[in-house]
Image 1: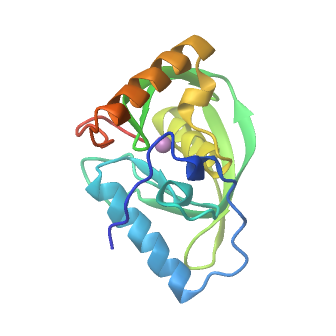
Image 2: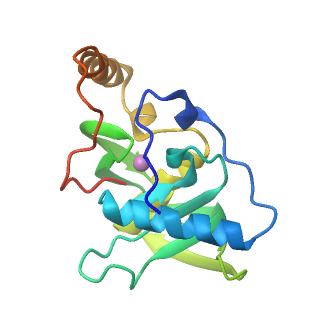
Image 3: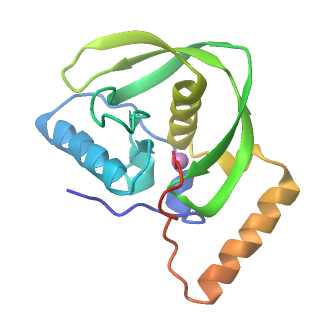
Length: 179
Ligand code: NI
């Protein structure tokens, strides 16, 4: 089931995700919904917070050539190590019509649970590392625009307020590699 994606400045995007305490059938179905919603958008990552469910669940697939091949479905993800830095032009399915350069760790190590109840540890770099850090930020109520300068954020906020005033729908622009 495709779920509606929340858009900034929806206050629900500021919620903190709770740790999942049990992987139930309903939870696995919800993760499938998140995957379907991400591909439908289309985007390369989506966090449960973005569809209004404050739980620590993210899905990421940066492989546009073969969707599903490298799909990650992560429950209670935790970054355990960070190395180096990288600047990437980010967009977000919850932040319409906007991209900005964000600095993040270039390489990370992460542990998480999968829907089939396996605990996994792996490393990621470049775009995958960026996408994972971006999604984990969502679980802490943080958007990439919280990581840019105050002036840039203020200008973007004004633009969104104008869109809302004009009654324009806050739909993410298609074709943008939104995370
Ligand atoms: Ni995002």
